Amino acid sequence: MPTQMLVLNHAKKDMERRQHIGTVVLLCHVVHALYLNQILSTCIHSRVTYSPQSERRRCELMSYLVHTDKCRDIIRMGPEAFMQLCLKLRGTGIVKDTIKYTVEEKVAKFLHIVGHNVKNRTISFFFYRSGETVSRHFHTVLHVILALGEEFIAQPSVADVPPQILNNSRFYPFFKDCIGAIDGTHIRVKVPRAEAPRFRGRKEHPTQNVLAACNFDMKFTYVLAGWEGTAFDSRILKDALSKEDPLIIPEGKFYLGDAGFMLKQGLLTPYRGVRYHLKEYSSRGPQNPRELFNLRHSSLRNVIERTFGVLKKRFPIIASGTEPHYSFEVMIDIVLACCILHNFLMGVDIDEALIAEVDHELVQNDIDRSQTQQRDEDYRLGSLLREAITTEMGNLYGA
Image (cartoon, rainbow, N blue to C red; front, side, top):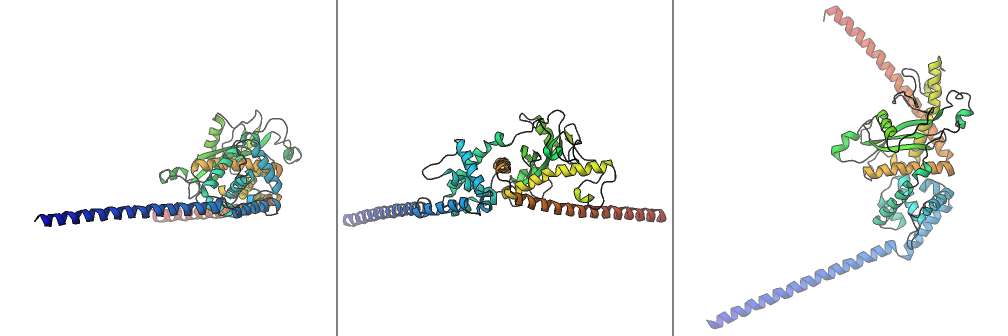
């Protein structure tokens, strides 16, 4: 009996020893696998970010951007304007050159994103950078562009009559106190599903309503972003006039607004119920003073539509019909940054071909609007006819 117990104890100890050895071997395999994974990840990261080949490809890409005629297609501005912008941003001291990254590369990545509405992974592929690096550079450049807001978006003074009015007998002296035009535009946003109804106004998807004013040089003089898409332009204007940093309308001056605004001192709107859009006068000119006023009002106020058109054509990130890649708060900053860049470019790199393209589209929109109004008139006449027949039938049958 003691011999049997001795054998059992020995077998038990042997099993425990084998289990211990098995656990140690398993742990060794796990540690080895983790080590190999770390080495592999480091090699891949090094190949994408730091290898001489990647650096050479980045240099070739940057050289291609600033020394070929494709620059405007890729980053939405010419080479000279791009270098001026980089110089301006470098001068702020916020965005800087480092051993691994130049200011030019950081700005180019930002411009590519806003100019094509692409994701970080796309930029990561072209620039051989990690997605985290692309995101960090994007937000750095966004921040520094916003810091230039006061320099490039300035409200008008009372000094001079705009030359577009002064030198045109159609507008002078009638609109000599006009300082620009004002309107709202809808830009798609990404918000939580519970908040979506507040932002779903004229569009099927959530939008923010951005109020902006511009002068007759097609530069923005005031921008207020962030209002939900269901907000009316008049309500946003009221907020703009009462903010700590308000929209300023100098005494005796006025902006031009469409019929969506309320007529008031400082904001001149067209006559309601009177032909207004330019295409409506193509076949028959104005027949009375009110139509003449509306025609010339429309001709001047058209500048805000042209300005919005150029802005969205140049920066598709705020014109896309797809859901944005960025949060609502970041999209507010992106809208402001795009307006700042627009003003900068209207000073140093006016793209006449882009403006002509926008003007052509606005003419086509006028045609479409005119056709819609004709259909609305047909509906009104058909409705009157239907009501007349219904009334007649009711009288006949005593219904």
